[in-house]
Image (cartoon, rainbow over all chains, first blue to last red):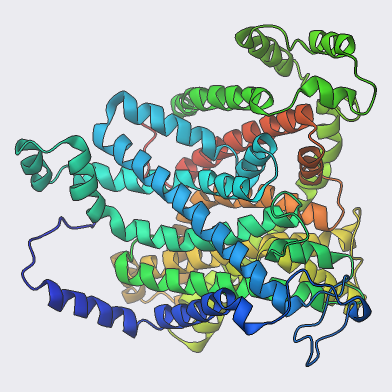
Length: 292
Length: 307
């Protein structure tokens, strides 16, 4: 984390980009993870093209039917096509993952930069708030936020996002503290750059490596947490599909129709696995000392 | 050492204060009137609402309400559930043993498998065993606990019919939720132990131990393990947090009447006093568990100084 070197003036920018790209290509984790993930994203986005059925369409005569040519992954208790629902549900699950991380990373990184750069009472205040947030473990903070805001999908994103703030703040603050010691920061300050300019243009690029790694793993965590909240009945509400909600809806029928729960669960797991692979690969390349 | 303990406890004061304020404000940030929730479907006339508000102290200024809430909390009184009118403290204490039982069992399983797999993996670095072990760990951390719970029910209760699917009481009803809960922690523990071991294996003193002619068994058990397991203590807190929040899901799925299951029900039923009391209880417990882990860390790692 602390071995990030200050930016150097690079005359062979293009060459280095190429070299960087080659390193990514050579990492098996990155390649496998990206391919799986891109496949999933493509399938999910092309849902209306891939299936002609609506995700909420009920085939009343085909309830709880096992996988067949007509219903690729079977049907649920209302006779809805599970394959279609997984594709459309993926749009929501992936959205929750991305938006929550966007919220958490933006706020977390900003707080970390401010705390590390200004130090003093600002730092103390921010870090005490972070300590407070950390007192609510795991999805507990998200549950508290949902309890206050009410159960709706956008509240799930806010809840999951806000509860991921501490990770970013802690890492970015630590890196900022060490980077602001470098001479080039002093030089920039001496030239009269504003604090925001120094933070965003000079410090931020140098703490990007750990941020990228945490963000990648964060998307996986956010998808799991978002689906967990919907699973508990606190996120996406029926009839629209979402992976966690589908798992919950199929739970009652697990004895007679295991496919109703098996496939949405597999969808979550494969997506999360792909993102984690990508994250592991990125960590090995960008920031080998960061342990997650 | 005592000085360090006191210092660590003093450091926790601002956190504890902020936690209590946040939890207290929860009730007031929530849209909807707690008095209305309390009255529920009963015919609520404006006069009745006003009387309930008066009873609950909702008309007094916030700082005054906070002080009286905290004063009561310190005496073990967290108010009454809006739904059942049972004291929140009683409800928590009734549910707590089931959650502790589950968390302890999961912690045990996670430690055995996580540390075991991590050690095996590190000792067979860059072999097929390492690859398989680390793939298993990756799958472990990628399995949402609600999904692994359902899979375990499917395999052991539905297909093999050797374990009961739901309920509580007895080892046979504990084992499935505990495994489900342990998986994620075991996975991250295995990865942590492996990288920590690999780091220690490259240290000079390990080379020294080997060149002294000590057997590999002694080198690993006396010189490597003892040092490699120290950093593991730091993620115990994180693990415990995972277990607590995972219990919310496993208890719901396995129909165990623990704190987690109660919490979800309270959120769903908008039983704000119960949510508030339970949140306060869990958060404070977690803060103190983390202090305890910090202290353990200082004890097991002689390189860390108290100040």
